[in-house]
Each structure stands twice: as C-alpha cells, then as structure tokens.
Length: 226
Image (tube, one colour):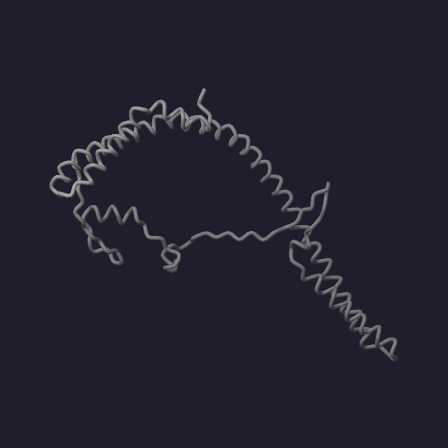
C-alpha cells in the first residue's frame, strides 16, 4: 500500500537518508569554499564540490522519478476510472441538451411569431382608434391602444432566452448565447494575437542563427565541471 500524503515526507526522508546526509555535507563544504578570500584557493575548492553537486542533483532527480512512478501510475488509474464514467455522463448530457436546445429554439421562434402577430394586431387597433375618435373618451381609448401596441411590440423584441424560458419538473430551461471562434486564416491575424514560438527560436539560435528579426542573441561564458 502506498503511503498517505500525510506520511509521505517522513517516508521519503527515511528512504533517502543517505542522500540527505550527502546534501548537508556538500552544503558545509560549499560554505567553506565560499568563505575563502583567495580566488585561486576558492576555485580549487569549488570545482570538485560543483562536480559532486551535479552528480548528486542527477541522483536526486533519478530517485524523485523512481519515487513518483507508482503514484503517477495510481493517479492514471484513478483518472481512467472516473473519466470513463464521466465520459458516459457527458455523452448522455450532450444528447439531452441537443433535444432541449432544439425544443427551446423552436419554442423561441414560435413565441416570437406569436408576439409579432400580437404586436401587429395591436398596431392595427391603435391605428383604427386613432382614425376614428369623436370625443375625449375615444381619444383616451386611442392613446391607450397606442401604448398597448408599443408594449406589445417591445415584448416581440425580447431576447431568445426570454422567449424560450420554460419550466418543467421543477427545472427551468432557457437559451444562452455562446460565442466560439475558429482561425480560418492564420496569416491574416493581427500582431497582437501572435505568440512567438520560443522553441523554434531556441532551436534556430543553438543551430547558429543570429539574424532573426526581433531577437537579440547574446553569448556568455559560464563554468562547467565534469
């Protein structure tokens, strides 16, 4: 059985006590070398310690990967188990949403047609009342019909979400606007939407390229111990 997250630090400390001791020893040796005032003496002390640190780093990384491997495998098994079930749920949800979406869009279209028809009828009534009034009462009636026509027209201009909204089984369903995009012509993209390919730049620079527009290449001499 794998150790729990709470016991992992203690578990790894016990299994890598030798390497932890080596790190402490290298730290003491490095501090001593860095404390030397004479540069030549500091170099003579630093070079072998640097090599030892490099070798210890490699061993530390090897052990890290080895210690992590069973947890990675376990994590993959966990992911596979849950993703398989989640995938089935996701497929069912997409199919149900397709049905829901088709129904709601049809409902919104039908509601818009009904509201537009009602708005047209209200406008016709308002126009008839405005053309045929003989007294103050009929004038008030004409004004009321005009106001009703305006309100009815506004309802016909409602958003699809408002037109489609409905409740069933204690659940409210509606439509929402989802914006997606597809790049159809990469060459036409404005500069602000382009990301430099640092991997390709690094490969070219290491191969000797020095004439890449917009890229400044510098060379420094850094120590290496083997």
